[in-house]
Length: 444
Ligand SMILES: [Zn+2]
Image (cartoon, rainbow, N blue to C red):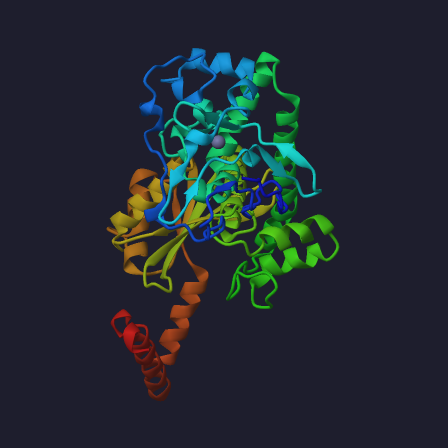
């Protein structure tokens, strides 16, 4: 029963399972790191319920019962050390699998850092009464939804190495650790080693984001495409975003090592390099830009609006909403506010959509002084067009027909004077209508 200490590298966010398994019996052919077979999973879902008596001051985490503020305050002051039960007899934790037996290995109380140093895993608690392990932070400061196995008690030793590493790197665990450390720091009793570990993790991910955010900003402000045909580091078709990160990593050893470790780690492993991270930052940045525009419009007070709609690739009409105003510096600014999917093309529906956008952005229509659309009847109509509906609300909003569209109409009418040209363009138009028919999509 000798713990095998051929531990492989771990670091913040590492999901590599390490073979820190203590095993029992001779017929062991299943090792940590195997694909997890749910049917063999023996996790205890009701470990906390199995415990007969509750005592919030017990050194057995399964006996804490319902976690309330007083329990949190007590254990945040006391820290996890006395509850870890590192010296407990773990014989009772033996579980029988199909062809083997396993029990909890005390080697899980340690993890190996990238530099080879062993650090204590201070959040891990062993419960002698239920023979399960718990997470100190999640048990006390978790979401309380019972979703985390380490909140309600975990005892599937066959997959323990992987599950513990996964838990350590999960968002919910990080949040719980953050809450615990904040609480303990407020009480002035935080364990310095644990705090150091947590802070080093925070610093690591903050360093990653310091490299990711400028790349997102660079591509966004130039309107360049982010994604390519693949999302794999090391390939030439992985798009501008991943390509630039690879370029920076040529001169930045930190990013290089991060990409090597997490770049192609797959779904479920936080890397902060994924398209999801990009989308989140793009959204944050666009919200910030939008709020700046709105603030400027409010300072300048008067504005005009330009609206047009066009179908996108999926044949959904997108309403483009543009606002025009004179900046405090005296310059004419024309800003795109947003795309708005619309289902109806009537003047009334478009007016409602425009008013909704202005309302969402807290811009007062009574300060609007101009509107500019194309000459289509639903936009320019004197009685039921969008411009008429807006004018009903605010008579000071003067309508100006779009010069480009007016020029286009003049061109079309001139063409119609010549039969050959009219026939040619009619043919082009019919061909376009035929090809863009959504019902034909399956055929092309
Ligand atoms: Zn946890």
